Image 1 (cartoon, helix red, strand yellow):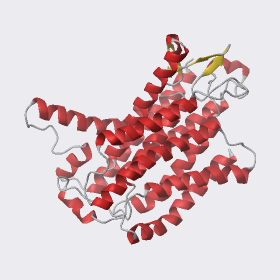
Image 2: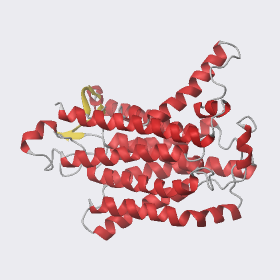
Image 3: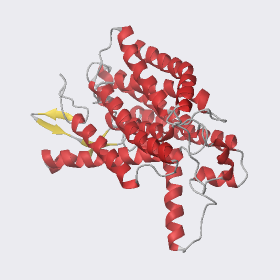
Image 4: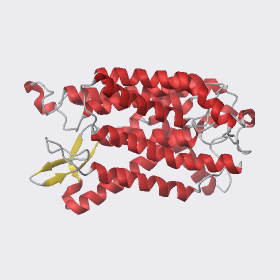
Length: 373
């Protein structure tokens, strides 16, 4: 518990105090935001605002995680904690390349769409491979459970779904399916956060409450662990998850880091997270869902991202089917409401409320599943 509180606090203080220094640095080296001509015209006033702010809260979360453990000197570092960091940093690097090319060439297109996805696939595949290896003393890997030398891997919702066992297709087939499944989740989540990052503070606030959900989930799984954490009367309710407390710690560090960053990112934003931040956050959220074995619950936890991304897909499909007609004035959905006359801060706060309601529903469903077993 102490590393969790320390990590969150250190991450928050880091981003709250260090972000102004990064703003000056990014301004000095010319890392300013490029604004698309086909977006809302009011956004052109934001041109030149420092971007790539994801660097700040990614570093902040890592610093908080490391110092929280070192100062507490009680809870050891874990494989799952570093896997979340790996996914966040890896996806963040893909986003950084995209941001860097945009600022260097002063255009809205950095990496090509398929190049960006290729980078995300590489990071997701390495993550999945690492999650399949190194069982601990309880015969748990981050991805599954080793029984009699065979690793059992499932698709999960609130916990593993017994009839969706990937290793029913054999050890190799199950591993391949797991890698593909991880790619679907990670690429979808990272691009979902990326699409939502269109207004000051919108993606930051929504991701903050999404990662906060995993603080509760990880801590609850730790208290109800099948390996010494649960009361005997509740063993049938326990969770088979590797190092859930450390998942709660890294989730707290990310969430705390976002709180400090939001101070400077809220309207009017003095710095943007860029693709560096949005892809990194999406990767971290995907990793938390996979490692806590609550993958399908991510649809609710990231409900706002799902809706915003869905609005883009619906708009494009409808545009092609009707040969030029539109459902929304502009997609993603937040721009539609801007063009309807809503103030930017109004859109952001209302979307935060929606994100919070989705997270509350997800956490409530998570608890009710345990309570009703």
